[in-house]
Image 1 (tube, one colour):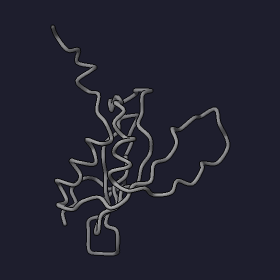
Image 2 (tube, helix red, strand yellow; image 1 turned 120 degrees about the vertical axis):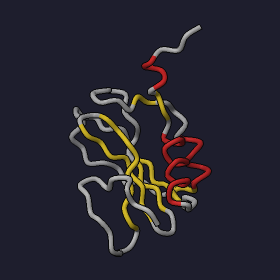
Image 3 (tube, rainbow, N blue to C red; image 1 turned 180 degrees about the vertical axis):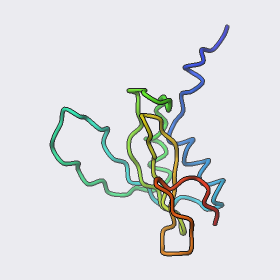
Image 4 (cartoon, rainbow, N blue to C red; image 1 turned 135 degrees about the vertical axis):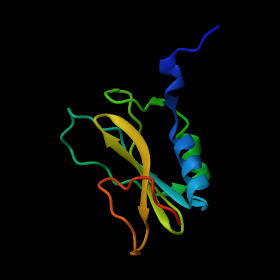
Amino acid sequence: MSISAHYCRMETLEQFIEEFERRVGERVEAIAIGAHYDPDDPRPGVKAAPVSRDQALLMLRIKFDRDRGSRDQPRPIYAWTASWVMFIGEEDGGTRPCWVPRAPMPCVPTLDGEDQWTS
């Protein structure tokens, strides 16, 4: 039985967060989860209250396709550690985890918080 290449590109935000924690060496403290983008809904977004890491990870196990042009996109999130804020970056429909310093510090600014940051 073979697994399609499309299925192999499916990931979860839970996986993104766990990889982010490994790369920065810090545990996520809280996560705010936004609503899916709907171009047909002109209303402003609803504010999301941050929830605990463990509570949020249970809600972020839904698979999505991170490839460019996919209509199956993840929810927007902000995830905070002691030193970093992670968010989902998007370019032409392709998604990836990105992060920026939580407080002012010497750094190399990029347009989307590229994952070149180290703590």
